[in-house]
Image (cartoon, rainbow, N blue to C red; front, side):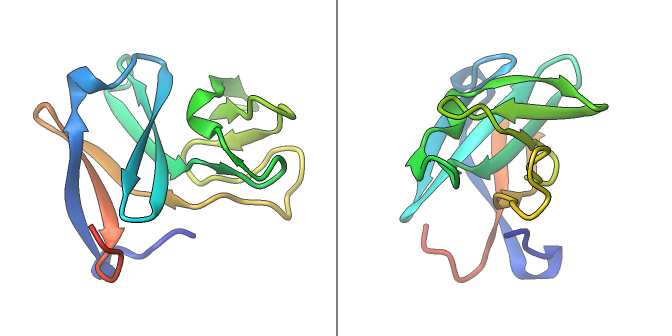
Length: 120
């Protein structure tokens, strides 16, 4: 799921110091688990669904990030499929995509844009 900006509101999830450089951490918002990835060299944060659709486990935050085919990706820790950090597309299976949300650093605050209907 990728939501549109006009239906989103920015929510602060944590501070930059709570993130691990070039790695992932999991956050919970309502019933949704979100995997946050921080790339300090790009000063960028990415937010993906933490749920791996191949293993049916909430593990993507534990995956290894890297650069494949010119895209930043996370390798799922169980079966190793690669998901693009910017749009959640699986590189090995074009029919599979995990949800993403816009994410940003606002000073030291890590913010994710969530649909207005998602409980906080």
